[in-house]
Structures are given as structure tokens and as C-alpha cells.
Amino acid sequence: MGLIGFGKDIEKSLLEATSPFVFSTVNERSILRFLKLIACDNGKIGTDAKLVDDRNESAHPNGNIFYSTEAALDIKITEILRMVAAIQAHSKPVIEHCYREFLLQNHDPDEREYADAVDQIREVLIHGNYLSQKDIEICLGFDVETLAPSRNRRDAGVACGSR
Image 1: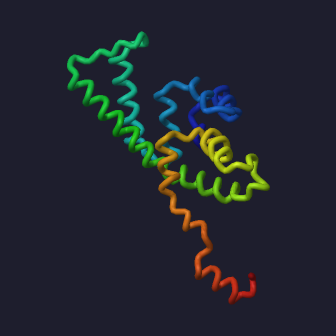
Image 2 (image 1 turned 90 degrees about the horizontal axis):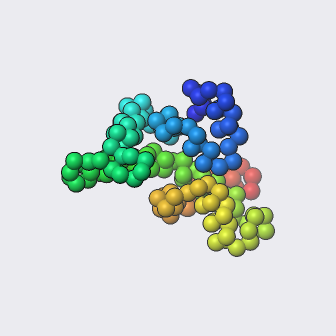
Image 3 (image 1 turned 60 degrees about the vertical axis):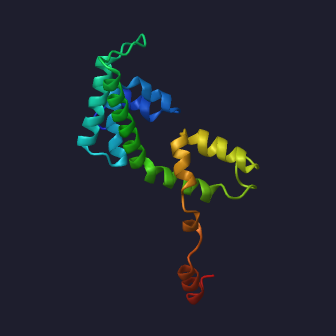
């Protein structure tokens, strides 16, 4: 569904992507449409697109940034950081789901790719999912108790004879 609105050639290359860097071929303003996948509405996406437009009008590819005052630059930096924080907040359920699935599928050292847990986490979870430091912080806050069978489910299982 995230590819709606892209031409067939771009859609094909994005579907065959083996790295997030393939998405660099799509212009920044258009790539923001993917935020719909994490429940951002058109208003939020429009606000974020405006920041991209503002940046394009005030920054030159040679690295020069054109702002009349340091205060104006500080305001723009604050807006961008607010945008990034909002995107991160919208991403939280996706990251938590990814982490939950990782924990469920990689707990057995005999069945996973790397016997060492640190290697498995680094290579499969972090590098495999291109997690950022902020994404890792979300994983660290994940309630692993949600993975433990609840007492009610265990009791129901015994009562039904399904243990």
C-alpha cells in the first residue's frame, strides 16, 4: 500500500530493494508519503514536507546554509528535531513489533544464526533492521513480561487439558 502513487519503474525498484538506500532515488518530498504507513495523517506529512521545502530554499548543496540570524537557524533546528521526535513516536509500535518478533524467533541459540547473543542482536536485530540509537532505546523500554504466558492463560490451558 505504501507504493500507491509511485510509477511502475520506481515501484519495481522499491519492491526489489535489498537496502533502505534504494529509497534515495525517490525525492525527499515524495518519500514522506511513506509516513502514512506509521499512521501519520496528510496534515503531518504536509508539515514535514514544508520543512524539506524550507531547507531546500535555505541550504545550498555546497554546504552553505543561508539564515539571516542564528535565532532563525535555532528555530528551524528545533522544528526539525520536533518533526523527527514525532516520526519516532509514530514508529514506536512498528519497532516494538519488530523487537517482539526478534525475541520470539531468536531465543534458542541452537536455532539462530549466531550462537552468541550479542552477535545475534547486533547483526540480525540492529543491522538487519537498520535500527537507529533511538530505535534501540525503544527496544530497551519494551516490556518483556508481555512475552511470558499469563497466569490466566496457563490456568485456562490446564482446565482445558491442553498442557
